[in-house]
Length: 406
Image 1 (spheres, one colour):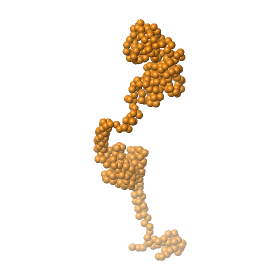
Image 2 (cartoon, rainbow, N blue to C red):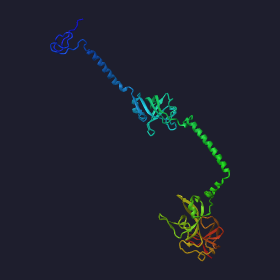
Image 3 (cartoon, one colour):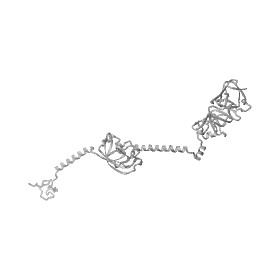
Image 4 (cartoon, rainbow, N blue to C red):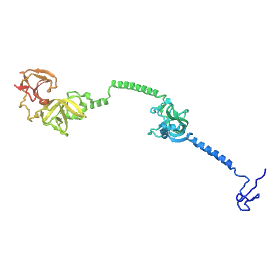
């Protein structure tokens, strides 16, 4: 094989072996013993470029790996349009294990587990795993890192986890160690039933035994509402001190009957009965007594208005010399209603006490003669006369004189 002559690349002068410079023009001589294989380099470069181009086109469809917090992963899982774009991608998720079977909406039968980043955050990471041995003894809030692939599970976007790393383990609440929630509930109901029967038995034994001296003393000092005898007489102070004690009962309230109506702070004029100091009062409903300026007794049912006692009066009784509420004249022994004999002007009903609400105990005919031994003022301006034990008849009501002095 003939050896190729070496010539100057600039002027074409023939070169001798070992020349470093052209003897004619001085141009440095290139080493032509191992020429650069440009053709091969071009082929290799083309192949590399083609590979890079193919990788660039395929790369978007290849699986990616992401590292997120549990709430960030949850946002992806809760948005199906986003989640389906990442099917097949691998996720490394940091969070806290949610292990509260009573509140978790995902049942045990579904084999689903959840992680949360913050209990106040609504986004949870939902995942499945074939090996849940590391999760069985994890308590609520245990810190874990899971690694899995996002995919679809019958319409639910979840992570299929194959790696679980426990960073911080919390103990399981002892109440969750029972076989299942149903057995726990039955156990609780049985215990409650046993406790109830035991309590009933103890209560029965306690009731059958004699009260201690302390119990007797407390019962004596604090009588119940049932200990109040209806119709008994109490003072205004006693009523005001414990109104609930007398609520709903018909009582006789002893106090001072003023001559004029009482003006309340909201401008109402109401009949009242005062205590002995005239500093306290109780409102009267059902009528106004026709006397005042003296001691008296109001008979009526006690009602409560926001805890404040009110007397729903059915009768009034003066004590001692009284003054008419309308005339301010004394009604003493020398006045119009002396205790004497009267004639009946109309057929009349005799009642048990001086009120139209009292039951009927007899009757009088026109022209009957009766002896009046006591005079009392009743509701609606009525005046009553006592003709016998528990026997009262109305003398007048402001419109009519039913009885006249004989």
